[in-house]
Length: 142
Image (cartoon, rainbow, N blue to C red; front, side, top):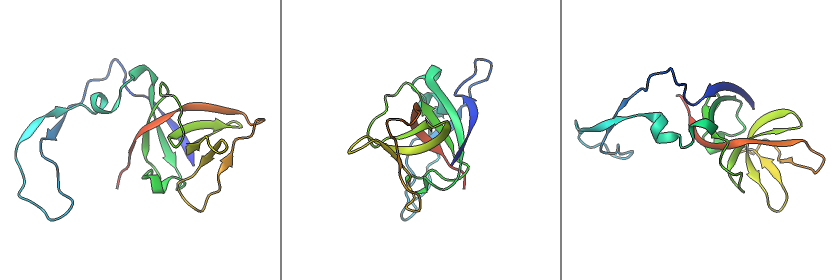
């Protein structure tokens, strides 16, 4: 999986984009009559980003995380201020190459794909491992 840096979550000179946000949920089963009521506009930066200074976007390529709903071309929102934890999806550099994988700390430290065709990456003591943030959201296009 390749990762392209897209930039920080917000830039001071960019305007906020407010998108209509509907009060009611959309059913995934049998459709119901549509509501015309809009609660208020929503700013996705406000909704998704908790720590602006530590948040950045990256675009991924590849299929190693498809079972975690991270598809080829997805944009990930990554927060560097979140402590890395067991079973969280992270961005890391291992021996100089960046990757997006699920972190396992127990029974031994390794990075696992969410696609059975890829083997885990065991993080040995001599490996050069750098944590680059926890993935907090994935934006996929269809």
